[in-house]
Image (cartoon, rainbow, N blue to C red):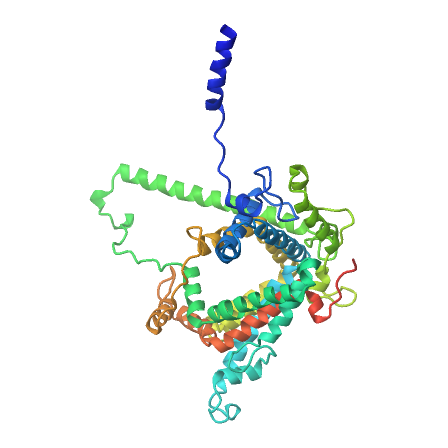
Length: 506
């Protein structure tokens, strides 16, 4: 009887002793409804923090719930396989893009090509403005955007800043053929629908917004931060104290404060010295490009057929957690276009004797943006910086790729995904589109930008530099040329076969 009573007591206590079940996440409920475990499959091939995998799946789930689920539930409320099928296709696309991003050398792109494009934009804008009242503009009959288009002609942009949709349809169609699985890219109807959606979002929603002068100016103001307020009450200086106020206690406080300031400065110098020495050692130990350096090795980048096989088997074996959690890496993997072919090789000759100079283009861009050559003080600073850059060029050519490699990390992607999720889905659903500012508000944004002085107070050179930097971005038609040029360079870096560069042998 005692054993029966103890069994009843244990049976009554067992439900209370069980841990409370964890709530099912949105990604698990929408994207993997038949997955037996709470662990989501790996989305990326390379090893990343688990938080990034969860954030990416949550972002995909929020996007599908907001933009696909409303119209799909009106068609049928019983089909639960549509969203998981979209997730499978997105996983394939993300892995193909990840492989190409890992195979791309971003040092020439960010340190040479992008600064060169921005520098040329500023130079051509100023040349076009200087020709407005000359015979080049037909006696002032031609507007600024047409003169600028003559200096920077592009087959995808008209003189008035209108974008040719056929050009981007061809580019997006090639990207879809490369990134989509064969069973989804082969049907033209499915590929054309996806292409038109991407082209519409890119050409009708994104580019017209980011090329507006007020949008660029507001973004710069947000990056600069709020203007520091000047202090209204002057700080009391120990030197202004009267002789009667000086005592032994005051001298002790002044002495200890000076010791604390000196010790803090010494500790900061020691920490900076150690950090600099450690960074220099790491940079010097990093092999150069072509010696197996910062560029990823081909064996980590999958072949497209291998990627398709691992992705499809990944979703067909969702009932097996051990298989779904295993990274999709094969020993016979080969890379997409190699870094040497995915970026321009202007920094090397046939024998590879000429080394890249990554610091000259950014310095030239800064000098051109702020018109540093027009003022004596800034011109001296520019010349000194160029001399130092030329002297330390071998080290800087290693340092800049090292910094880019460290910056473009999974943590950066994680922060971008979190910011994008909070911005696009503040309450779990899309936020209402922001209202464009009125002309009065746009003028206030520009005035706020030109009035920014930072912590340096009033400075005529700073005001002149801000005006020089903002003016070439004040024409939307000219800004379209800049955005299209940058998009072309990024797309060519990821898909070099678009310009005839042969991809690496697979």
